[in-house]
Each structure stands twice: as C-alpha cells, then as structure tokens.
Amino acid sequence: MYPLKFEPIYKEKIWGGRALEEKFSKKLPKGSIGESWELAAHENGTSIISNGNLAGMSLMEAIKQEGEKILGTEAKEDYYKKFPLLIKILDANDKLSVQVHPDDEYAFEHENGELGKTEMWYVIDAQEDAKLVYGVKPEVDKEEFVSSIKEGRLEENLIEVNVEAGDVIYIPTGMVHTTHKGILIAEIQQNSDTTYRVYDWNRMGKDGKPRELHIEAALDVIKFGTKPEEKVVGLEIKEEGYVRTILVACPYFTTETLDIAEKYSSDTNHERFYVLMGLEGKAKLSYEGGEMELKAGETLLLPATLGEYELVGECKLIKSYIRDLAEFKAELKELGYSQEEIKQIKGL
Image 1 (cartoon, rainbow, N blue to C red):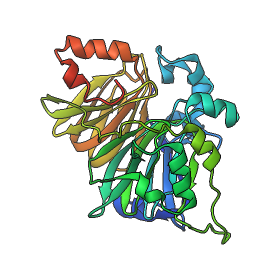
Image 2: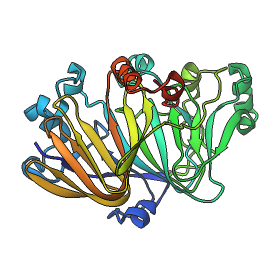
Image 3: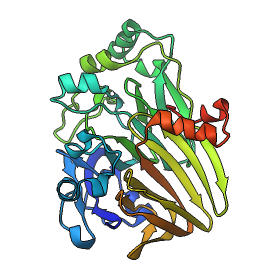
C-alpha cells in the first residue's frame, strides 16, 4: 500500500469565501466556497482517490477491495460499512449559524441511522479580533434559552472567545457553537453531516427566504448547565527534530499536531490508518516503495500496512487516528507523564 491522496469536494456556503484559493492555491469552482471536504465517505460527498493504482476509486470502494490493508487490525467492524472520520477545511468568510450537533443515539433514532457529530476545530488563520461562540452560559436553562430566541437576545446567553491562528477547541455533542467572520479552520469530526441551526442572524438563503432552523431538535440535544469548555492546551512532547502535541483523545478520534523542524519518523504497524493534513510549509514523505510531497492544504491517508515512513522538511501538520483510550492513557503513564499532564489532552 501507499499514501492515498484525494480530490477535494468543495461546498458552496452562504458564509463561504475564497480563502482556500488564497491560502492554499486550491483550484476552486466559482462562488462562495465554505467547505473543502478533504477526506470523506458520506452520502453527501465521497472522496475519490487521485494517485496510484487505486486512482479513480472512491474511498469506500478501496476499503471494500483492500480491507484491513487500509483500515488496520484494530479497526472496528463498523468502519468497513461507514468510514469513521470526516476531515474538512472551513472558510468562515462570514458568520456560521449558531448550531449544535446530536450524539450517536439521538442521530441514529432521528436522522435515519446517521452518526453523531463530535468535532475538533484547529484555527489555521484568523483576522484580528476574530471570535467564536463556544457554549451557553452555565446559568442559562432551557426556558431562558427559548425566551432569548423568541425575544431576539440569544447572543447575550452565548459565550464568546477570541481566537487566533493555532488555537484549538474541542466541540463535543450538545455544545452550542459558531464562528464569526474571518476564520479559516481545520475540522476533524465524526462522519456525519447533521447540524441543528438555532439562529442564523436573520439571514436569507439564495431563494430569498430565511434558512431553515431546527430549534426543537436542538433543544433536545443541547446540554444546558455545563461548565464552559476551555481552549485545548494539549500535551507537548519535544523530540529531536520535531515537537508533537497531543490535542484530543476521545472515543471518536485522536488528534495531534506535529511541528517538524528537520524530520519525523514513525510506523503504521499494521494496526490503524492515519490521516495527515498539512497546515504550514511542506515536507518530503518517504516510505518503502516511494516518496511524495506533503504541502500545506493537502491531506493524505496513510494505510495501516504502509509501514515505516519519514517526513523530512520544515512543516506543521495535524495527525488524526483512532485509539483505544485506556491503552493510550496507560502508555502515557508508562512514559512518565503525570495525571495532570495527561489532563491537558481533551477527552482523555
């Protein structure tokens, strides 16, 4: 097997722009492009492999043909039916709707067997004084929340945070969130396209009518009275030639950034697949049988049977994968990290 590249799937959005073209030289179609689905296997968009002898096949077709060679020995049976991750880049040229996502149980029952949508946002770029909405104030209950929607004062019940490039937030199901304008985001999430809009800034869609809201469903899944989340700090591990920061380790995905100054070597070990998304700079990826370049704005899937690989160059990337959390936590303790240090990883 070899590292798989994919054709991006571009989604026009009312809040989108052209930042993907400006930042990463992506060849965008006309319009306001809000999302680039970098790696997807969903009914609303499925990735097509663009390199090697699997070129032209969809991700799920390749998995059906190659199976464990791609997914690995640790893959759950469900992954062969539905790939577990959806990797995107968002261009919030304008505000997204105020929104929330359901968990697996609610989505399965109410969204025709869909997965829930836990996600993580990494801020790639942000204009000065950029802000996100990141939760509901803990003193706000459902009754007050509904009243504030009806009375047009919802914003006073939302928690706003300033963000800049490099900030990371973890968005579990049930958390109300949105982004204001001028933010470019890498999004790692469960393979789901279910979003419940609570408020859309009185904005009109292309048809000149207000966009659909999903207030009743949103109220079912919002977790009121919870402590506001903080930005992700992560566990920083300094090694010769690179810095590895483990950001999130939840049941659905584990993510880390790699700041490579010289080189980084690892091994897929036949156990699991890995996804690499370039954020800054570029590196040469070498593996048994070949090499290729990984640039900012590109995403690769490393099959479980790729084996040993090395990245040489100066770059920053996000590495995403799925791990058994108890096993992962035990490994970190064996390496000498304290409980307090491990707590810096969201979800673990």
